[in-house]
Amino acid sequence: MAIATTMRPLISLALPEKGAARLAGQILLAIAGTLLLILSAKTKVILGPVDISMQTLAVFLIAAAFGMRLGVATLLLYMAEGAWGVPVFQSTPEKGIGVAYMLGSTGGYLAGFVVMAAIVGWAADRGWDRHPIKLFNAMLVAEIVMMAMGFAWLALLIGPEKSWQFGVVPFIVGDLIKVALAASLVPAAWSLLKRS
Image (tube, rainbow, N blue to C red; front, top):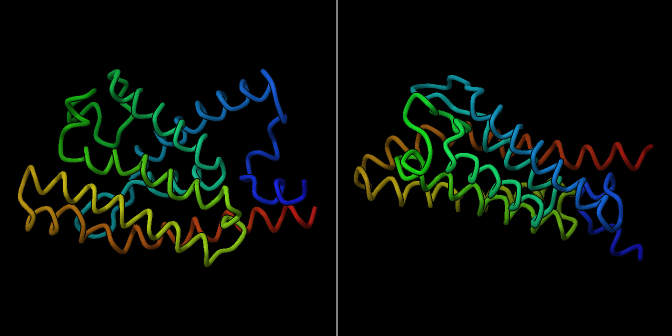
């Protein structure tokens, strides 16, 4: 029993073990997660020539705290809200809404968020969320995969050179900072819980 407890994601400590109450809690957490994603998408930090949203940080924190299944479900709910035309993404409604927006220049990055949540959530399910170095490595892999997906999709639209120049390079420093921050916050939360 101790092994199962130590390998559960952070949020599982707040959820009932079984039944309808657990499902209701998971649904509420997924909705709360989408609200955090919307807020993070609309929060912009100017770092150099581009606006950087806090969205990747939110994806990291949700996936690490929720684990793979609930983390991915939260991201899929968020994508469904966007597909339905709710202005949940960074540049909506200014640059369009719905599926048309999702198939635009940020489409690969949006799909990459789901994969990012799967990778980080998988690591959290295995207890890596208690160790800053392990969690950093998992988040770095997730970041690289997400950026590669975004780059590949953008390269189809504007070519690989411009995709690298405008879709990857300006975000490297900011995203590395977000990886380091998220990889520090989640193990810190576990440490606080152990003390209490």
